[in-house]
Image (cartoon, rainbow, N blue to C red; front, top):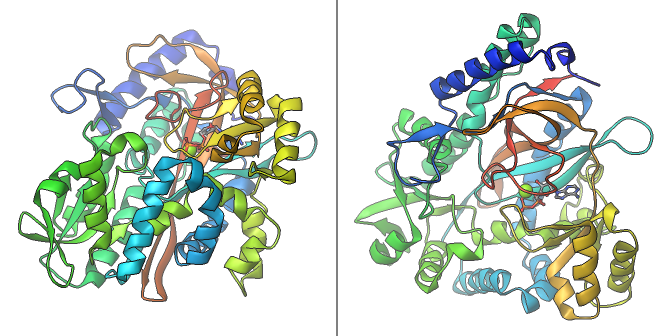
Amino acid sequence: MAAPWEDVLRDGAAIREAAAVAVDAALLQGVLMRTEGQPNASDVVNFAPFTLLPSAVPSALFEQAYAVQQDFNMLVDAISQNKEFLEHTLASTIKVDDFTARLFRIYTQVLEEGLAQSVFLGINRSDYMFDSGVEGPPALKQIEINTIAASFGGLTSRTVAVHGQVLKVLGKPQEASRLLPNNPSKGLALGIAKAWELYGSPSAVVMFVVEEVQRNIFDQRCVENELWNRDIRVIRKRFRDVFEKGSLDEARRLYMDGQEVAVVYYREGYVPSNYNEQNWEARLLLERSRAVKCPDIATQLAGTKKVQQELSRPGTLERLLPGHAEAVRRIRATFAGLYSLDMGADGDKAAAMAIADPDCFVLKPQREGGGNNLYGEELRQVLEKIRDSPQRTSYILMDKIKPRPAMNYLLRAHSSLQVSECISELGIFGVYVRRGSELVLNEAAGHLLRTKAVEHADGGVAAGVAVLDTPYLV
Ligand code: ADP
Ligand code: MG
């Protein structure tokens, strides 16, 4: 199903006019990023990349993605409390992947000492593509679930207004009025505020743990400002600051510069390059503390690609969510084919299958952040090289999702305006809060549509490949 503005796509003059309006609207609305040249200063900023037009999204799949989000929240939360499952599932990965091994070591260490934390906050984003399949209607297929530092909930809260204006400029006011409101930053902040409240110390602050290079600060500021509006103090610190100034008291309450911290919200810490020895020490200190970590180390591990692959094994979801048959059914319906490359007959078979037909699969290492996956010929070459080595267990294999492309214009600073064949990825934000064993909040908090030109197999907005978009339900 196409969006109802195919007619204007090739009207050069109208598109140029709309693009000029769009860029200024984005700047006015705060769809902003710092520049590559000055990534830590707000003196010079630019608009974050976005599509000129909204993209058509089948309404049934959009609703399906929302309907399964509370199930995914519950699932991630259940995995994070299941030591045996995490241990068993990640056993092969941590033998060959140092980063996961290091996270796992902190996880074990914290459990051995006994958890000081009793309130838990999860913010995740489950990402999907619409598989066009050979026949029948498109199907919703999960790409991955991000359980740490899921971004763009802030900036995407501001793209609806931009796209609404573009549609009006193009003479489509009715279509503009059909764009759905969307405000993930508010939902995320509500979750953080709830965790802060349950922590129960009114003078304590919320600490965002941020990267050394902070180009995407405005996305985070959207969430931050929602917290300030609720009279909750927010501080922004790097691991380095935590190493230098963080401490625990005898009850393992966390202090930064003498201020008690109720909630630690990580926008950092998900890739190996985020860590040196001091940063690892800082991470351990935070994990040992009583503060609510979003996510705690167990929940970060629950978001690994290896866990995702294990979830697709028959019987696994049922074991993790006993008594939730409907939730299990809804979750499983979104799974694409996933295959373990562990040593043994099944792994041999999966490797051979991908080598024979590399264009039908994606080879994924145990990494986050985009740009790491292998496709096509490269997939074949790498897999041939490691097919008999334990190194292959640091990857998982996945069916390649093939969405139907649509035409759009991708607006980027310093780039010329040209039409591209594009595909989109829909993310749904999930937020939940648990106190002890009681889930006190479990919600879908909004969505994110990211669109990229078909020639890029991989990569997100931060990686400079995908751009922000708004769904237009058809
Ligand atoms: P990361 O943790 O790096 O974000 P993802 O699993 O999200 O890892 O993969 C990165 C990108 O690769 C996705 O945004 C998507 O564009 C593409 N991709 C991942 N898995 C598939 C798949 N099974 N089929 C098609 N494209 C995929
Ligand atoms: Mg991703």
